[in-house]
View 1 (spheres, rainbow, N blue to C red):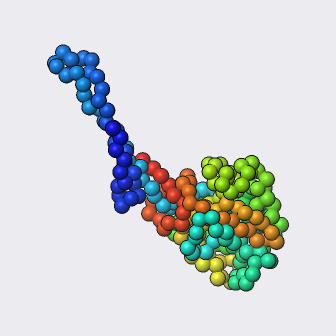
View 2: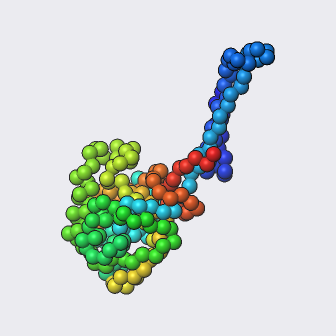
View 3: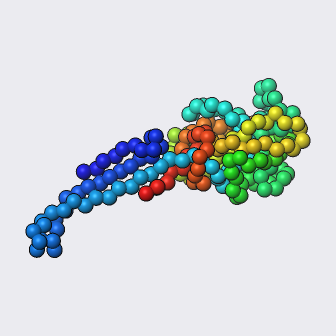
Length: 220
């Protein structure tokens, strides 16, 4: 029989399997059958550290699955409250070229919850358009539902969630408080919008606030 139960305050799933098997050699001592079992437990963790993230800082808030959010403000964003800082982050290197490459390929370094990073000031309409359109053109899955069901869609990205963005126009430090996953919807006039999704991703597990990005691992 198979027994499945949740453990660890519903953050874990334990599976136990038991089966009666015929015993060949044990028959000489009068044993014809025996009980063989195995068990494994997997746990869901928060995403505490990640690579290949896109350099967009989204301010912490309550996200709803499938809803569209502004990931980077642009010239068409109504009531954009930030003078000089539109959402890009400086990861690894500074400047528009590094920002565009990180948009296309993801930042190769490891970013942690609690780490302080600098903003990358300026709207950078051109690099923003090139970076996002590169990902959209590389997608062959056919839309939101198909993309989020895939494990390798370039339009599904991990972004750092930050504590604030109401900083001056020059580069300032903000704090990473978590990570979230978004489907890149569109880019226009420097504005990037994406739809929030919850999913498992590759990364470093640990105690982190739940913004929808999760890591699953066997614990025994």
